[in-house]
View 1: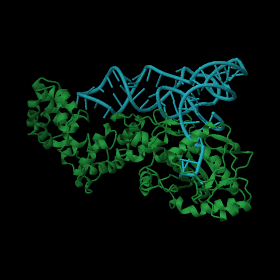
View 2 (view 1 turned 135 degrees about the horizontal axis):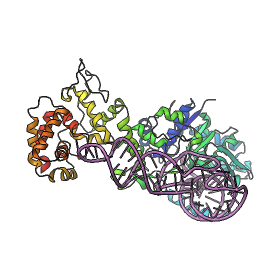
View 3 (view 1 turned 180 degrees about the vertical axis):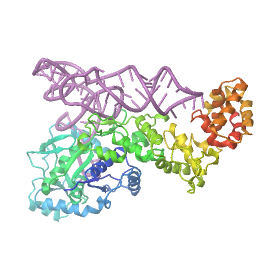
View 4 (view 1 turned 90 degrees about the vertical axis):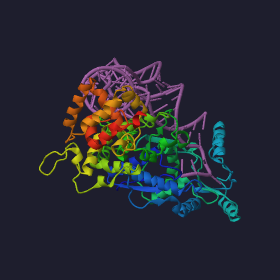
Length: 521
RNA sequence: GACCGGUUCGUCUAGGGGUUAGGACACCGCCCUUUCACGGCGGCAACACGGGUUCAAAUCCCGUACCGGUUACCA
């Protein structure tokens, strides 16, 4: 029997990172076992489900690279089958009609009711007066149009048990499980019924989902048993918690919990996927690897290395530099600086495009692509100065140069803006540290520009000679000139070797910016 | 309250009877250097607590504490 798993989100908001991780684990397990990864949208809560949420979930899955197999199942399409199943159970005497009038409740009153019920100890789960109503009377009252819900008739004694692939043997006494409602009095099928029916119909072999469903599982097993169908294997996942070890929610924690936030804030999908995979699972057995490609994850993944304890997602509110978990940020930086340039380029292109910094000549396909680390050369093997390279070569080499200190793709258009536009901002701290502190630079930098003017080849060795001679002449330190120039040329205090910056920007821009007075005012 | 889980550095984790308790992130220091959030080297830092079992417990058992989940005619 081949493995069939499903990811079954309810479209009541954006894709939560915890859900994204659940989807990832399902995907990894399917790929690992050569199985099928299905997608089911659990949209039976009509009041809260929205198409927009569905779209956002689909976008998120696509972004993080989890393509599902087969067509998407919308649970609401199966409502008739769910109702039929409930009626079948009723006809077989495994469920009963509950004529207790429905209480009108809001989310708030429900929570209050749960707390209130908690206070009454030793509640008997079988005290429903309609549980043992004769079928004759039940049928009669129903025929009279009296509204009723259908509840599963849970046996008086016994227990449900199953072997969870993560948490091991799970047992629950029937006396701890109520006669759960299968069908609402308005005919609407409820979650546990719908899930079981759909999982049976979709021939799901492994249910991999959050640990918050652990107790639901006992109810669902009861339904499987009533239906006389063997339940699938269950694997429950530890939860992802907020820094205070509480629930990670949109209400409380805002957009850090939404997958789309990471897409919109310059994350490399593979990096975030890698991070998520390691939050609740590890390869074990002394493996000290952190960076995993998708193929490596599939290769290493197994249910028995999923952790049992919840993990804290350690972001820092009100700290822009640590706005999300440090390890996620680090991993993203790691991907940006080490991934093959060819894979990074499309991501950077999208970022620069959205900031209107991308120019079509960067895409010029006439010149061969820059491969990273190797200087571009003309046909006869002579290394060409950068400014003589084609636009595409210049662009690709520049991206390769500046990516080493970037944390997100946003940095290419923010800190990296000066490489692509004349319209860039100056960091106040950088100006204070590298320019205003040395007033002489006000005259020296334009003067340095004059020294560059007559240069025929504007390459690193030549530039170095000119700058060094200039520094000695002025009797100052090389750092003063270099750092001042860096601030003026790029607007920021950090970046690659200054000689590469000069060469990358080219003679013309270098001269122009050195003479500019903008930063000084 | 009841039922069910969980507890190794600040965080993610390895280790599951004998280890100087390992790695990663963060933080700190040194080196490299014209700057730097790159790179190199190093440092700080953990087995929740109490009993037992055992020659030996972070590891097995029991209890306590704390944290989490569930307890809907929500999903």
